[in-house]
Image 1 (tube, rainbow, N blue to C red):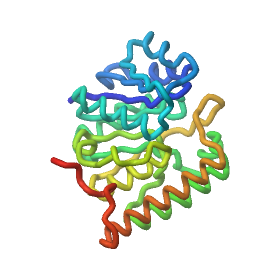
Image 2 (cartoon, helix red, strand yellow; image 1 turned 30 degrees about the vertical axis):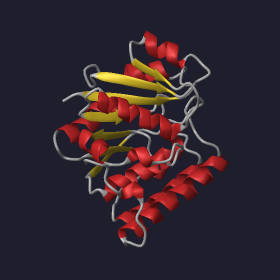
Image 3 (cartoon, rainbow, N blue to C red; image 1 turned 45 degrees about the horizontal axis):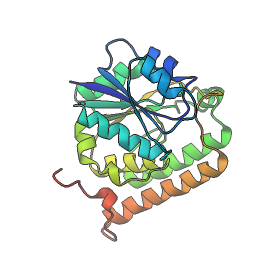
Length: 247
């Protein structure tokens, strides 16, 4: 199997190398960095590290960045794709474990959950309002989808090729709610979702959206869940939950 790590990057010059260095040797066959028009040296550092680098000429947004990441990974023959934020918030040393659960057929999607205990999450630097918002949204999403995940909002994820060839992620938002839409889609298409605990590492260089954008993200996440429920009840027909042509 070909294992590809993708990194949606924006102004990650201070943390990219540390994130890459932590990936165990031999855990992945290729690392793709998609730079969303950073104003720092992200591209230069990625090229120096010998990574596959693609740069957006204009800033398109977090969701659009992931679309480029997954499209490139599929084009380059990936069997398993692991998405790692290059801001060093997630511990990339865990990469082989995420890959192993998918490679060995246990799950189709793997998530890195930061919410093992409230104490750990808060001591790791997660803001209090984000912790409680995470808990509230995760509760709603679990109830709506009949899942029992401990966190729906992690940025450390791995997917099998079949997931990326089936889920119509190209139709998702170009903004942060892409993650919520993607995971709801995985559930809608009956893919098996597993999770592993990962340390919480909020720090000065870690990417994080402000309160206003967090509220927007939360509301759009609830919208994605409502759309899923209405589609499942056949009240509406949403393209987010319709198969790709040929899938």
